[in-house]
Length: 105
Image (cartoon, rainbow, N blue to C red; front, top):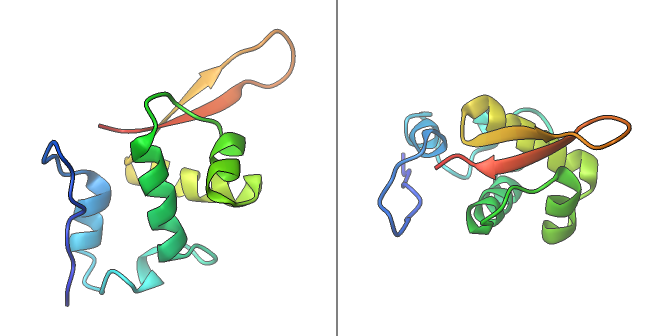
């Protein structure tokens, strides 16, 4: 088994990293992800979230990484369940609130 923590300049370890390290499967194995989610795409989504200084919507993340909004939302929802991403709501004048996602640091 080979699992590594993702290198960060501040040397913090996130729950996402711990889960990957102790999953008992190689990093490239999608066994710990829900059906339909890819490890490679998850890594792209995580890398982009870590780069952002401000929270983003699923739509803006989808545009940034080249996914559909629905796919981006599935990855974000999974990361929220893991505790790696925080979600906040922005209420407008009319309609549903917008979900904004931020890497939990």
